Structures are given as structure tokens and as C-alpha cells.
Length: 568
Image (cartoon, rainbow, N blue to C red; front, side, top):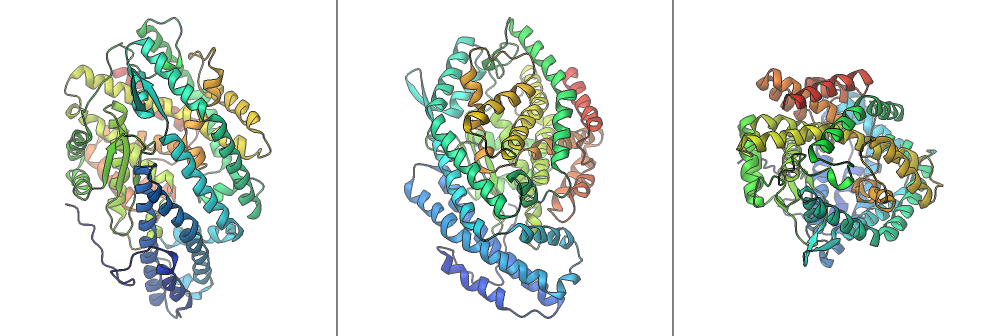
């Protein structure tokens, strides 16, 4: 079992955060404390970090329990109380403490590992902080919960049985084309029932987000979010260049893959419900029967990469930090939630036995390894790494494990299918990332748009990045509402380009692994262990790859993946 124990040195061991009043005295003491040396300042920062860890973990558990059963009114109320009453106070006091920190002459003495990056981020947060935005952000968190509850409640009736949307999505892998089309239409009919409600919710969120940007002195929410997310190493112009690179370098390969799929399936026309089925027409792979088996398979594969990786998953299993199976009322999607005080994170997902579930598990397992590797860092700020680093951890793990998938797919034909599916996914995710990212750039630089105008823009952007081989004739309604299934748009706006940046980095890590497995894993661990104590290009360099969105680099990496795919 991986040891993540840590004793409190500032807060009472028995303290729990039931309400703001439980933690308020410690924020007040930190604000009033006199600091006269670099040593006292570092102690102050560690005390603040302990408070942040305890508050963060309390919020984490309330969120986790709410997503485990979105129908539980009591659990939902506890989460709402936290985001509505505790977090706004925490944000206001964090701003006070950060201003105190930056006003101290001793701050200039903080030049050790991690401090320049940490202080750079704090300065930017102070620059954009507005007290008027605190309550608006709390309202947006509550609205995001509304979205999660709405999506979690969606079910369809299939062959006389009510099933969840993740269970329905698994039927899209059926070799029976009539079944695939039927479930596709049922799912979209169900989404259409909530379309107006989600349109109204999203419109209200866009209005509030634009108000946040205006309050902070920004022309639009996109520019505000680039600042709020601490994007010091890439700009909107880099994102737009990436969109163009995808059109030029990736879409031709995706179109080729779609033509091959159409030929293999013996189809005259490739439809949206033909994209998940195995192109050989074989029944879908079902690599595990239940969540327990998925955990055991993951541990076996992780052990081949590094025995310590498997120990981390075992630790989470022993501590009850895994909830993997799909069920009624469970929120959609999957996540790894770091728990800054206790150390061992929590993995949540909706497994139904598919190859996609295997990918999700190793992906979230990569995030978990990242959490374990950074737990020893002395400040929570060092562990609060940006998504470009977080997703490098998870997406690299997807590819690093591939050489050991024979433990999951013992049949050589199944193994080849699973690997081919994964490499196609690596290629096709880039146009989807470009779609979601370009949509966000468009809608947040045009906050005056109506929902009808946003919908029209979505269709145009989706057409731009979906290639020329998939026929959407007669499916205008389905296509126009497709964006609503992407939870990032509602819950974590502008968190998506990171997937592309990290996917490119992950391809580089995998290419290194092909050349020297031990060195590639060593570099991977070294990079993740840095947390956010170095700028992004330096973290990527430690992993042995470049932080680069240029067309030349995209062409080089996509060429490598295409060659590996052809070799299968």
C-alpha cells in the first residue's frame, strides 16, 4: 500500500469543515499574523497550504458523493451549501491572503523550486479578481450541477428495459446496423426532450460568464479564461493555428480511415451510427465483466510499466477510492479527483464492459499516478497543475500501456482490434478537440448571439472538422444538439484545447517508449513529479517531448501514429 499519510501541523487533527465558521478563524489568523523573515513566510505558506488542502478535500468529497447519486437530495444540498456558502468566503479570504503575501518584502526571497511559477500565477489571479464575481461563480457552479443532474437522469427504453445513456452508447458497437441506428435515434430523441431546457441553462451561463469577464476588465470571456487558467505558454492565436493544422494534417487521414471503414463494412454511405462498430463487423469487444475485473486487469498492465503504478491502484482499491460501474442516477463521464490532504485520489466512471471503459480507466489511472507522485510536494499550489500537464499524465498512460494490452485481450485478433481502435481514437480526437475549442472561441467572442445563432455556428464548425465521409443527411436536429453532450462546455469552459496539447505530448512520450521503455517511464515520472513547479515547456522537456502546436510538429507526430496504425 502506498503511504500517503500526512499529519496536520497547523489545524486541529479533529477539525472538520461543516460550515464556513469552522475554518474562518484560521483564515483570520493567517491574515493577522506578523511575518518578519523568509523562514516565517515559508511556515505561513505551509500553514495556508494545509488549510487549502482541508477545504479542498471537503469540497471534493461533497462533489464526489453528489455525482455518485444525483437523485440524493440531501447530498445535493450539502454540495450546494458548500459551493454557495463556504467557497465564496474561501475565495474572498484567499484574495486577502494573496494580497498580503505579495505585499510582503520577504516574498522577493522566495526563489526556490516552484516559487517563481507559483507567484506568477498568484499575480495574475490578483490582477483579474473581482469581489463582484464571487457570487456569480457560485451561481455558475450550481448551474453546472443542474446540467449534471439533467444528463445523469437521461435514460432510454431498449427492448423493454430502461438503460442509462452510457449503456445505450455501448449498443452503438453492435454489428447489427439496424440496432445501431435505432439506439442512435433513441438517444437523440431523449436528448431532444431536454434540449430547450439545456439551451436556456447554457444561455444563462454565457450571460453570467460575459459579466464576469466585463467585471474583470476583459472584452470577452475567452480572454478572461486564458488569464484565469494561467495560460502563460500559449495564446488564442496558437489555438487557431492548431485548428488549421488539424484541417491540413489530420482530417485527410481521418477521411482515409472513414473510407476504409465504409469499405470494410460494405456500406455505400457511412452514417454517424457506423463509427463505433468494429469495421470488420465482428461483435464488440467486451474485455471485462464487472468493475472488479477491470481493476485487476488495470493493475496487471500498470505493473508491467512500473510495479509502483499498480501499488497506487491497489491503494485506492483498499481505501474505497474507486467507483467504476454505471448505474441509475449516477452523473455522466469519468474523473480522477485529487484529495490534497489524504493523498490517495478518487476515480469515478461509468463502466459497462467496453473497450472505451478500458481506455477511461487507464486514462484516469494516469491522473491518479500524477496525484500520488505530487502528493509529497510541500504546497497545494505546486500540486494544482494546469490541464496541459494533467492530461499529459493521463493520455500518455493510454499509449504507454498498449504494449501490455495482451493481458487484457489475450486473443491476438482482439488485441489487434483494440490497438487499432485506440490509434484511430488518437487521430480522431484531435478534430473533435478542434471542434469544441473553435466553438468556444466563436461563442464567447460573440456573447450577443442567440441560441439559434450559436446552433448555426456549431453546425458550421462541426462540418469544418468532421471530414467529408460521414453522411448527416436528415439528421440536422441531432447534429445541431450534439454539443450539449460535452460536459466541458457547461462545467469547465475552455478546458479542452489541453487535450490536444497533451495528446501530442503523449504521442511523443509513446514514441520515446518505443525506443527505450525504461528511460521513457523514468522521464514520464520525473515530469509528473514536478507538479507545477516549472513552466509548461520545461515540464514537457523533462518528459522528453516538445511543447509545440506547430503544423510541422503535428505532421511529424501524426505521421508516426499513422505508420503504427498501418503496421497493425
